[in-house]
Length: 185
Image 1 (cartoon, helix red, strand yellow):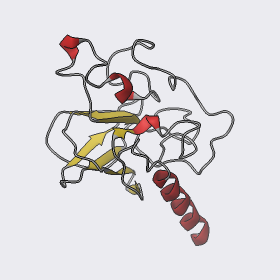
Image 2: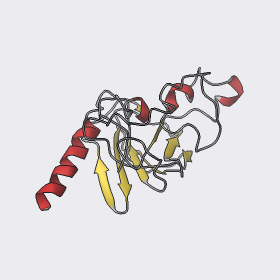
Image 3: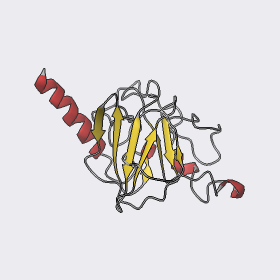
Image 4: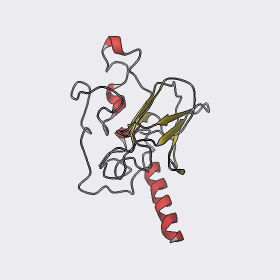
């Protein structure tokens, strides 16, 4: 039993590390505008099942809609919520430096609400975010890459083993992404 649990934690750590191309972020606690969001957790085990939920993964500026902290779980939030991709009147308050979705499992069956996502930047600034009922999290805190991240749920903490160069978590943590599935605890 002990070896099995150790293997699960190791697999989760490797899956978090697999996105070392800078497309994910999860650790921190700092001042600044932070959004409450869905699920916090770790990455997959290197291969999402064929029934992985691809809803919202293809959203790009102008292609998907919605509003609020529960909008479009699983989409690449930063693809739309970044300067140049927002309406001019929205750029001051709707751009995000880090954002993503935590799901209950590798396949993205449903969002994990109430998880804590911590993102720490290269200056030591840490942002702590709580996921919404859809599993979404986001912040406008000015974060300086590289970033490190971790997700906590019910006292269990999963940390990424590598740092990344941006906070676009769902760009990497998707069905066919390097971690092999959705971000989950």
